[in-house]
Each structure stands twice: as structure tokens, then as C-alpha cells.
Image (cartoon, rainbow, N blue to C red; front, side):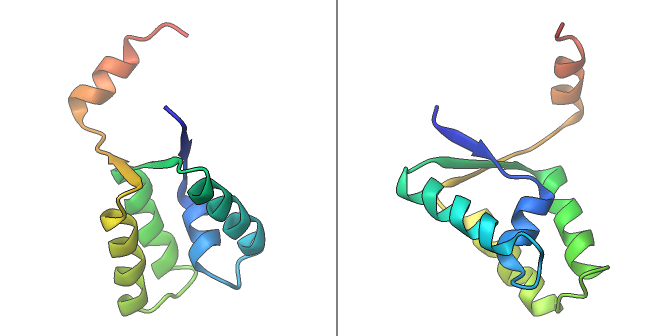
Length: 95
């Protein structure tokens, strides 16, 4: 699978123009879209993004919902839901 994991800071830098790495995040995002890559994130990352956008970034509630909806409804974004069972199965991996 040709995919890219996007974490909290990746989303924040992409959606908030005043963030330090906004230009870089935008360029990486555009390249990933051109290459038809799947963007992978998790429900935990999205929850953390809400906290970051709310405080300290002080994003308006309406903007916050626009950002979340655009991520969750994009056909090229896969949101992996971390559950207790998934955590337990990961703990058993030997790395």
C-alpha cells in the first residue's frame, strides 16, 4: 500500500497557515495527492488535533469542525480506530 501516516502536527501545519511548517506540510500533502497516496491517521490523532486547535492555537469552533469534517470525509484518508483490542494485539508484537 502506498500510504502516508499523518500525525497531529502534520494536520495542524497543513490547516493553520500561521504554523511554522505550513508550506512544507502543504507541499508534502500536494505531492501525496498527486501520487494518489492514502493518508492514514487515527482517532487518537484526531482527538489530539481537536485539543491542539482549541488551545493553544485558539482556532474557532466553526473552523475546527470544518477541518475535522474535511479529514473524516476525504476519500483518500483512512482513519484507523484504535480500540482496546487493537492495543492488546499490538502489545503482543515483538519488535
